[in-house]
Image (cartoon, rainbow, N blue to C red; front, side):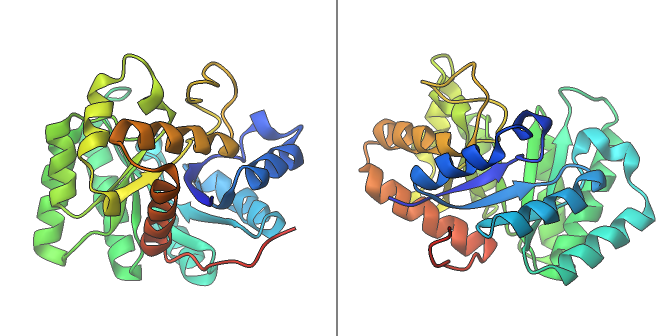
Length: 264
């Protein structure tokens, strides 16, 4: 069984001491590729070095909405240059809107639009963070698509209602579920996970955060994406091998990931 963890943060200090062991565990658990999401420009160089170290790791470059105050014209240029020069950059992001933790809604929206424009011009998908902002997110995406055409991308670590889930499916987005879907009280997320078509479904860990049951409370890591996939298969009444195959194919299609030979 092969899996792709479509959202990791293995550059965090939580992995500093044992990253080789973490790598060994993700490989032994069937994780064949990972997409590492950058949240600030300070991470770009370190993430490139991680991709040098682990050939199965690809990454995105962008600015998280909670860091929207860092946006400047030179960052726009930096994202464009890196995304154009390094073939391992497979998306723009993590970008989006977070109205739960910050109230600078207008600035976040402007920075989000700017990064949508970069992705559109470079023909790259987007990795979208959306928390307590689905209505505004939907409006911006509708307006952008009306003017510039289809947005390719994923709503990552999705926690929206079934109705909101359908909004973004209708806009053509993939929907990615993290370990949160395995939590006992996550009934709304579980309902959303049931309605996503198999050809729009992705899995992720968002590690080191949000470890799935039965690892909840521990540091999350890419190997644990197998628990997310297993739970989703059971929830949706699907065979785990089928779900793994389809989510892996979906990730490769969205991010245009190559099929790699086995890595050592």
